[in-house]
Image 1 (cartoon, rainbow, N blue to C red):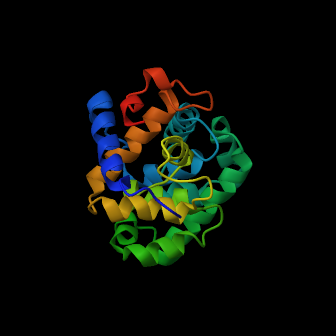
Image 2: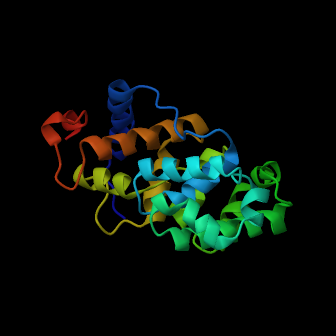
Length: 218
């Protein structure tokens, strides 16, 4: 991937502009690390508002825990998370994740988070239904590890500002951020949240460039 010589400066400028516009976003909203893990799977291919409804249902049923999801039947779980879409598929993925957590770490999120980052990422990517974005969301938001999360908004915004090209892979985009920025969990958290907000409000498929805080970056 060929990058412009001023990519580092432009990314830092991007952060400054978005941070000034949105302020501290305190993402990811959750009561506990395991809730983040569940949310990372439920948010696949759906809007966050649908995830919050599913999370609320799991809490009402008192099964939002490794033990609770391990014991509940898969059909019942699918029904509880119906609002998240693809609910039967996601129920299977949640079950696979809980089995992984139980078999590898005794069901303990503390033990999971204590694992070395590269090794844990490799293990997560072998769990059914967990791809790079989901794995990195778990690493950053649930385990507090300095791993930058790349999503569709990230690629769209960087492409529109000619920082990457259309052929850039997930790994290449992630490496761009992680080479330029210090390994700081709070910074990665806030930057990704800023990008998501920008994508939702301005950098849509039909962009609203005149209103976007990144207009002066162009």
